[in-house]
Amino acid sequence: MTLKLNVKAFCYGLALSLMLTACLNLTDKNITDKNIIQENVNEQKKNFNKEEPNKVFSIIVIPDTQNAIDYRRQKAMGFAIDSRDVFIEQMTDIANRKLNNDSHLAFVTSVGDVWQHQTKKIDKEHLERGFPALDDPKYNDVIEVTDKTRTFEMPTAVKGYERLSDANIPFGVAPGNHDYDAAWFENADRAHIGGLTNFLSVFSKNSTFYKDKPWYIASYQGGTSSAQIFNAAGYRFLHFSLEMLPSNDVLRWMQTVVNEHKGLPTIISTHDYLNVAGERKSAPVLDLARAEPKFHNSPEQLWQKFIRKNEQIFMVLCGHQLGQALRIDKNDAGYPVYQLLADFQGRGQVGIEAGQPRESATQPFGIGDGWYREMIFDFTNKVPVINVFTYSSHYKKYSSELLNYADWYKPLENPTLSDAEFYAADEFTLPLNDFYRQFGKPVL
Image (tube, rainbow, N blue to C red):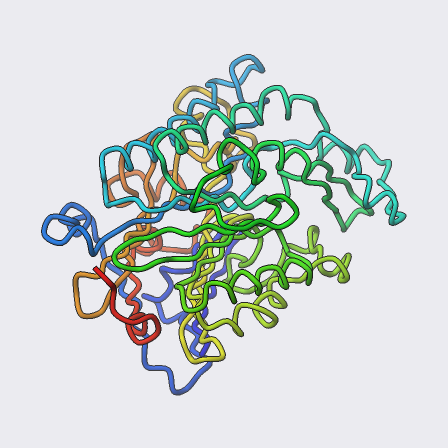
């Protein structure tokens, strides 16, 4: 079964809300689980945990944060605000959810692009493979190589993730293309990335974040990909923080970890997986699998080779491509796999309110505005559900609580939607109709 949502988008897109407008594409004629419930669930959020808190928990998804951490978007560089404060505020807010036992936060995952810039024009491995860096300012100026990555952006990231670590929150971080040491254009239509030395200096298995943590159970090449375990609502969950468009060697490592943890409900977080139309496709300019098929698998290959063949994988989370999308496919065992994209990096209302001029007539300087995804798993009823919310730590409100939400973000992200559809795309409920059949009843 494939349940896929398609939308027309200019730069950004929101796929989910079009279920309300007959844009639902069901490619399996026998599909019966069409009831992706769209509703305002703010009142539900307020009542979670009151009677059966051991049956409710939450996962928070941190979308791409590179724009907030960007050294150029700080007062010292002439920006209207210190956008790093928006990031630190976001991470502090997430940590406080754990400290305050809000929605019983069980795990936090980052889908990558933690910081903005690279520190090399080309990495050693690609240089040895004969890859040239395009010496053309028209394209190379797009990718700035700067030591500010190490002196400002990475330390800012560390400070933010220390908030989670100090709150004793299990978390995983998948590297995005901005987190690689090098990025360059081979030609006008194709860019490359390489090297994860910077990433490993912060998020390796031996980092202060992960060393000796019992929930950090496995890593590949020191932490370019990693696996975590967390317990919630009577279940033991397996999570992968997966590097971008992984190689076959990485997939073999993942299979070993899955084999050692058979039957656990499993989630994968990775950077590039869905586009805003709900398709498993990379953006053409950074289609690593097309450029180097021996070293990368495309999103579709990741699905075909690994995800669909492992029945315990029930969810994939991703960022990278601006906007939102939801796709549900049945794996080879007949169980649904929920695949969700969320990337809010282009939102820049906070800067506008502080007097920052727009980057262009239609586009602000994106800093993310503190938005992140909160996914509340509720096992209190006969059919468990995931209630998905979108929350801003800066505005301290959920998307449905902001009267100007559609005015601020819809013109850039998806002007074709009605305001109601736009709101519905950021608050919705997913019924987990097969979860008990697939994983059994919880052990409470």
